[in-house]
Length: 98
Image 1 (cartoon, helix red, strand yellow):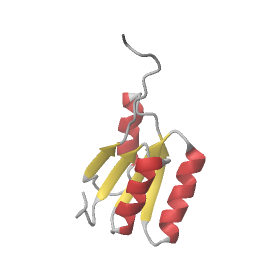
Image 2: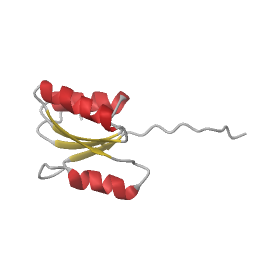
Image 3: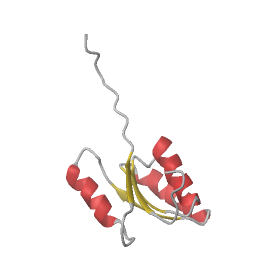
């Protein structure tokens, strides 16, 4: 995606870490980003930062463990068409298998 430009990108897991960094980078390169995650306050802050830098971003609170919520996030995209969807999930097992 390093050459992505003038695209609409939906990013889940966008409230911090890799998702946040990716959203900022893609917005800086001229893409419109739709951010999805569970933490609304973080999403608001990131959208404001992107817009302050001249980028275009919107957010939707979502939970990727619920298929209908992900579908709502993609449908929410106010841009005419989503060109790319990026899903950033880190799974951390709570127990060790022998």
